[in-house]
Image 1 (cartoon, rainbow, N blue to C red):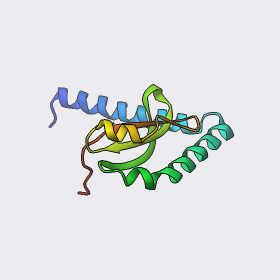
Image 2 (cartoon, rainbow, N blue to C red):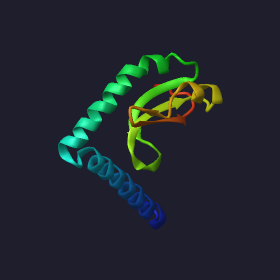
Image 3 (cartoon, rainbow, N blue to C red):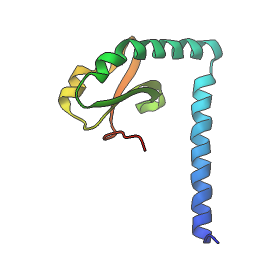
Length: 109
């Protein structure tokens, strides 16, 4: 049987995870068509730039997610946060934020 602390920690973890999913769902569905148009723009920009960004040494992934400030944007994941990578990736493309985040190597389990 789980201790009271583990039960509380499990509840808090589930609640926070559930809250984050709800918040992301809210962000993706708010403002109806305007949000859909923005997501299409983000997808298009990601698709246009993904091959070039992935070709940079140290870049391990390119995706769509929440960036600083809680906005939806493009996240470029890097093994190590190097200045030379940051200098090759813009912070904004057509008004869409692009954020470089250090994640380390990504490996399939």
